[in-house]
Amino acid sequence: MSKALNHLCKTLKLSVNEIDYIEDKQFPLKVPQDFLEQITAGDLNDPLLKQVLPIKAEQAVSDGFSKDPVGDLLKNPSPALIHKYHGRVLLIASPKCDIHCRYCFRRHFPYQEQTNQRHWQQAIKAIAQDSSIHEVILSGGDPMSLNESILLGLIKDIEKIQHIKTLRIHSRTPIVVPSKAPQDALLDWAKHSRLNKVMVVHCNHKNELSDKTANLLEKYRKNGFQLLNQSVLLKDINDTSEILVALSHALFELGVLPYYLHQLDKVQGAQHFEVTDTKALELMKQIRQQLPGYLVPTLVREIAGQPNKTPL
Ligand code: SF4
Image (tube, rainbow, N blue to C red; front, side, top):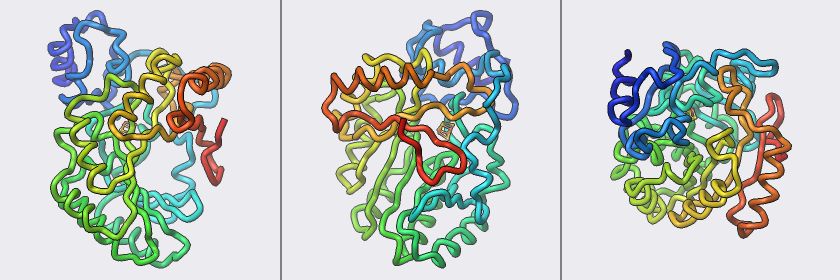
């Protein structure tokens, strides 16, 4: 039994024999302690546990599911840079995450080939030469899993490019491992920066929101970050209107506005998380009846080759 599985079973009082577990060497079980503490012990159906536990269903092969479902590798003008959308680019800042979400659309992405600091310099050069770009999105992996001073160095290089107006950070770190998220130096920079600052966190269920996360998000918000959330619609995890409504309210309590609800990207190994479009649309109808408009996320799908996310 792997060390990570042993620790998970021990902490959650589960027996390995109860779990339909598979060993996945390329994208192994990885759960940070903060997230583990949000899981209910002894409950195999816990909605957080299901997001991180590698199970045999991942080995199924289904039509339409592939290793690069959103076409990232097709839109790669220089290593570490993905230029799919008008006016903004995505810079892959870190090859790793502190958690492995089993539905991750980049679980097969060749990060090691795509990201290192030499590649960043090439990316920064390419951004500086294209004045049509006004927003840089730091993504990954998870950019906030970087050492704070390295992350800050990258951000300051971006800030020097005068046509860049907005820095956006996409991160699940503040939700799943708030105790390791960058704080002091990032907050100090944010207070004085000329850039618009947006942080898009990734939370799928209100049980993921701990007190540690609440405290951290408050600091980011008070220091100038606009906070948004994106979720992925996941079968048997958050596919009821009650769960989605509760999530929107819980996020708003923490100063975070719901932004996107993603239909699952059809990545190989994640078939068992898929919710049909019919059901997704019905859920949207139900939550619109229960929430003010500003708490209703936009239901979207990313389609390879399209210049924007496609609302359903
Ligand atoms: S945090 Fe995001 S990038 Fe990292 S494994 Fe989860 S979904 Fe994928």
